[in-house]
Length: 384
Image (cartoon, rainbow, N blue to C red; front, top):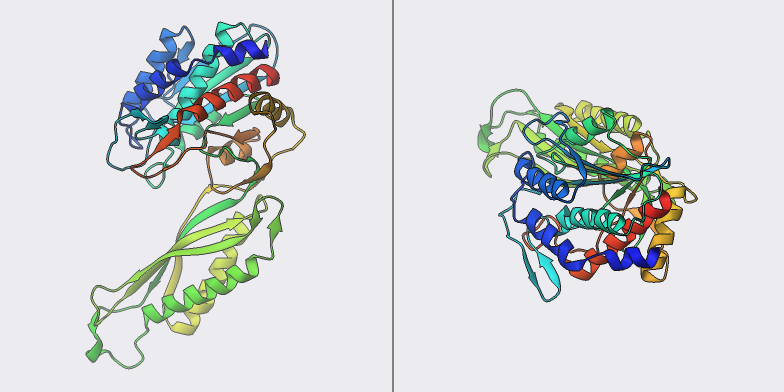
């Protein structure tokens, strides 16, 4: 049966699906048209399709089911249809690579999901359980806030295990860090003033902001002592600092932005308190007002059971397709798998080894799309 499934994956059919999805621009918060296109493709293939609004009526989600009619587990294929806000690039295939907006993140992967469903159907390989495909908008930050996925989970559109086609193909991430995106605001009373007219004792928001940076960098060195297998350590990263309007004006505000990541689930609240205490110390010493203006947590840390049925089914499928199981590793970023894991639903991220995500040069090898479609289909057959 496994050989029949592998032979049933049709490269051209997969490519046609991917190109049809990529051809529809779908920046985050505006993925309605591509959701309609995906729903039409699935309906034409005979799959049962639902369109729950899931807290985003502007672009109802897509839910498709392929049910064996027999008891068993449900494997969920989940992906986001929205893309980052960059100039649209239409699809093309050249030198064995598929190009275009969303080709790597992640319309190519969703097309591989659809092809896996077709292969399972065409050879009658799903003898128990079911496969649930969900696709949605509202993923890419800073435009989206994952509200549609959260609503789908609340409304019960979930499986017993989840596969996500993010562009991680060389290791199986069984652990990941939690993350918060933060903004610190440093302020003083009064109005901006020319540096030559600066009153004595006027608080310096730039100096206070610099001290915040130094203190946060020192904290980051301490955080490196908090480690976990596969994911490394806690970190604190500063990616932006800004203040003032021109070179010789004493400003009233400075802003510091970055990320705080942690390895132990449930550490977000403690990490926030730790930062707020540090900021209070700097404020008291500098005579400025300093506050944590933003603390956005897109996902918590997680760890997957290496001996779970989902991991076992995936590794067996990967070995059948490629000749070897994947090495275990950590997830370097936050994705929707963190959301599923926080809801108590085991999720694995595995997609094509693609390139150029979040750029205008997205591309994915066609052979990689075929490979992951085969892995997805065989995983479903074993897991369900």
